[in-house]
Amino acid sequence: MLSLLYTYPVKAAKNNDNENAQQLHRAKLSDVQKAIAEQESNIFDTNKQRSSLEQQLKNDDLAIAKVTKAINKIELDLRNTQQEINKLAAEKTQLTIAKQKQETLLAQQLRSAYTTGQHDYLKLLLNQDQSEKIQRTISYYQYLNQARIKEIDKFKVIIEQLSNVTIEHQNQIEHLNQLKVEQLQQDAEFRASKNQRKTTLQQLSNQLLSSQQQLNKLKAEENNLNQALNKLAAILQAEIDLTGLSKLKRKLSWPVKGNILHSFGTNKQGYLKWKGVLIGAPLSRQVQTIHNGTVIFSDWLKGYGLLTVIDHGSGYMSLYAHNQTLLKSVGDRVETGEPIALVGQSGGLDQSGLYFEIRHRGKVLNPKLWCK
Image (cartoon, rainbow, N blue to C red):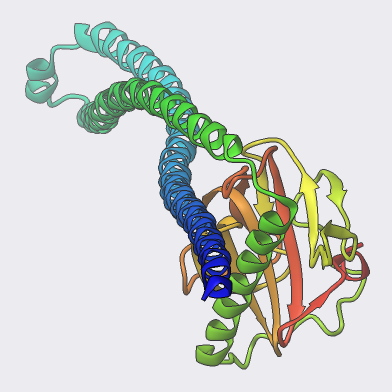
């Protein structure tokens, strides 16, 4: 009995220690679970915020593209209008000279008619002594009169043409002034869109990504591009007049003049390699297609910004990414060297340039082996 009294407190103490340990363990586990839940919540919020910012970046890029395209059209209209104004001014000068010549000629004819006017026309008709001379004089008067009427008709036509050209010239000048006003408005909108994009990029850069996160992001963007191209390849209707690029190795021109910032096959991030080349070039420089073909994609794509993809036939495609604006739409036929876009930095590129790829049946090719 005495031994039981000594044994019981010892067992009770051990049970209490185990219970305390379990409670402590449960408390620690609860803290860990809370920390995990909080971290997951932070990751979710960060991803949600980043996704929202990436959507905002897309909107910013599209806004810049829209304004740039409008500015590009206005500049073309300005050039055409100025050429028309110069043409009309030259035509106006020629018509003015012609008008002065007609005025001089008519003045000479009037002086000639006045000089010969001393022969009274009625006297000549009544004088029967010199009938042959009278007939010749009458014929001469008729000839002068017909010539004068003809020159007067020409003069009227010149006056009317001069009036029409003057009116058209003035209309073109007014149109030119209106285009300049629109250009100023578009420039202001362009600056506002650029400032908004700069703010969005700054917010994105503030959300620092780990190397693994950056790798996952790039991998997801690359997969997104591959999926888009695979879908395009599946629905693509081959055209008999597109012969591909197989015979054009080292004969193609580069799509834009600039320095190669990243070469094909070099390290991009982790195990990822560059599938094309990144060419540094100033904003708004024209991007030209390397060969004739059909535009099969012309839109914004995450990680690549404003992207144009051209089908050249026989499974060959060329890609042009990070543009400021796209000048062609899906279905447009393009010829070799035709402008298809303007250089930009859409899709989050930190400097202006063009990302360029060539693919054959989905396999990436080194552009340096194709472009001279």
